[in-house]
Image (cartoon, rainbow, N blue to C red; front, side, top):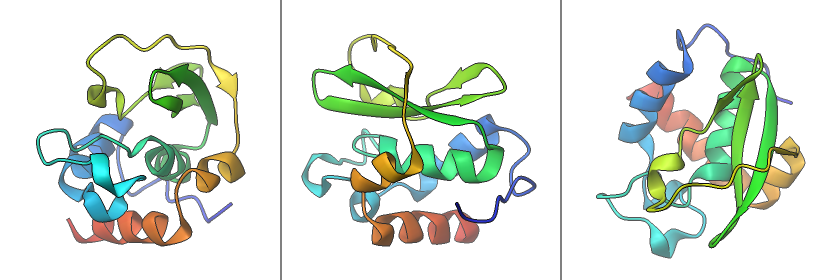
Length: 121
């Protein structure tokens, strides 16, 4: 697990606001579904990794029509910073997951690119 950067953002909401500026086709998995009008689309796994970097907690998953969806549990509170990509309610199952599973759904290059963009926005 990378060094935790807990002081970079005051709370997950502040991180979410920065992510909206940092998400792009380059950081989406897969690339082809991303649009500027839906910037969270295809960013759940990489975002769950970034959230855990900054705030700790657990990575969870649930099944959606599009496949496995990743999000976080921090101090007993569910934080899903990419829920805005969905047109329908998400049926949260809160299945325990891991950094390894989230990384398998993205790439180290996309993770590094999004981390870099957050430092630069």
